[in-house]
Image (cartoon, rainbow, N blue to C red; front, top):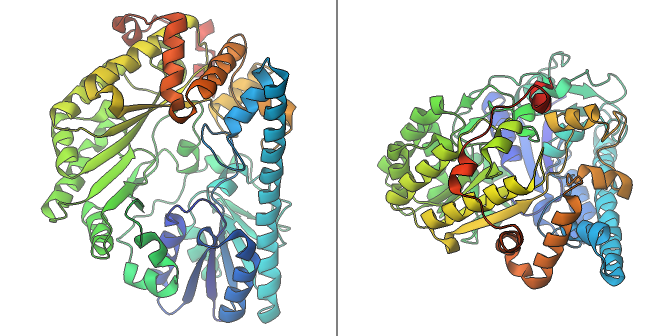
Length: 524
């Protein structure tokens, strides 16, 4: 039977669907005669999801449906499904005013309703698509993958039709083997009704693929909605320069899903891909790597890429990325400014070197500051988003004061109006060291459901334990009341008013840890 693939990006915020695009490009290069189509439900009104899916299937009659599911977990500091999840939770758990507590409870109910509604809707779209495709080809089946599925693959195993291939992590080699009729038992996947997910499946290493430039002429020919992302100047279009992250940050799932082996895409291929988008009018790019410069050994790769971008003549572009600022050099800083970097995010999590070590983040806060000074000296005058996750392992009043001092120093370097503190409370995710820490300390039981939004589970998954949990709850509620449009800066202001600010040198040195203090570090 001649294969025909329909890629379906399940509904989410209108973020460029780079995973689906790269999969379709990979398959076309290996099976040039195979027909493919892309349906991005992120560009479709909610009431039309089902009709759009039916219409595509009726028109194209696919033999294989490849679903990409991006988001499930909802703990975040920003607005989303029917409101602000963090604010709803904190009003419910910490508000003293019964009316505000009731508002939080009602907001939480709306949030839970929306959350479970999206789960059932997306599962329904998978089932609906397979059933409709089987009207034309009885052997039609689905592959389901993406970020959400990669994290929650164990909990979703009974949700999909039989013979559905559930993919964990990257899907290129899996799709290639499936299309060739080869055995899939060595891939990071399982087949519903035929096999069970292997123990620690997500921890297995992904295939070492090297990606060439995406062929956007081809992508445009199979994706009618492609131009949706080219119409507005504020869209950053994703371009991937590497995969993998070598670090062990205790709460992060990237290093598990993508693997620790960093695989670099050739710089000339990345620039060739950017040029195709540039020629279509795109001037803003987001490097979608887990970290743009994950370690010092990859500095030369970043220098090569930025130099090739500069040499390409694309001088009127802007780009942004997540960056480990401890890996910057004066040469890199100069190239970043010259090539148009106008925004970057650094996830230092805490301004206390002691807590940075306990979270296994592997960087030096003193080095970060010096490199930020180098970046400013190179002429960077744009926005920096700094991610802080308060109340992590062993947070104390003195470590909070250290974080305030560190943030104020970043403001002195870049300007207070250029440094945006993004206040997170970690959403505990499966397969992370933080989950193991929670098991070892009887915070969670191994049989808990990480997809549950029940209050007794959600309160533990939204990581804000006592004795400081109520304090942070009170501070955040005050910040939302006083300045909801600038929540992060208001939190920092209130914390400094209440606790004061440490000397900068206190932030930058960490005491030698005792054996007992190294609990998290020894979790394997």
